[in-house]
Image 1: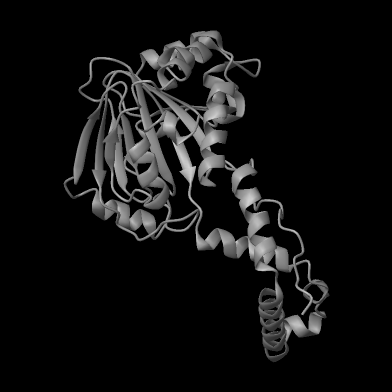
Image 2 (image 1 turned 180 degrees about the horizontal axis):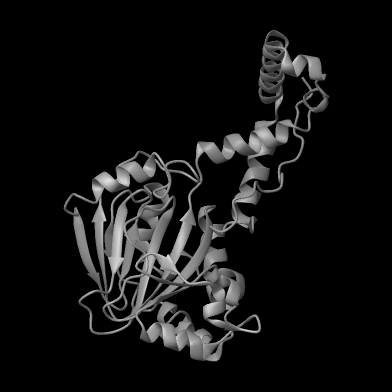
Length: 318
């Protein structure tokens, strides 16, 4: 199972060499096992039985989330309370499915191994006529698989270029300022996503997903691919450079608080970093980076802490 469980062979080949930059609709191949592995019954069973981890649930309506006490009892998910809020029009968001659903984990792990893009999954159950999240954009590619019912997706072209991690998020300035301006514009695309369809939604495209006007509950799972960029490589190289002993030496307080002395320290650190990078064994670094790209577990959107340094010390002999 990899991208081929979601897309036909031609689409997979195209994606591997020309990663999508515009929204598009697809369907899984006819022989795909995806409908057997990920379906509305799987998602609803977690809610009906209360076996989903309560800390991974968000119960939200029109952008406002409830406190977990509203849908838990004694620290566990309470199916009766969840049903009550669903009946009142609240969307249930099941975060990080890849962490606690083996079937979803297998798909995400296979996509990550194939692409090198850290992959996680989130489920959404939205009552007919309801809306959980409002206008926003995401920092990563979303592969949205509709399981049951229909959901409307209003989509706008990116208002900022290449949003990434915490940079230009739609809920903080300056991204939020752009979002408010874009909300006054007509959407560039509008899809009523049907069961069995997959919406490819590249990062940065503002969207307003809702089930308003629908007569059936909507259930979908979004597979999120955290794309690799030069930003990721540069960050890992900087972490690896910290293995250099000179860069780990203490700077005396007087050289920190004195502007001229501190400027010299910054210059020295820059030069040491540059020397380390020039002398690094690029082939060995690339091998370690590829291993990290295919295996690193900390890819969910909840965790933003810097990952462990998974790159060895590959200083060349020169």
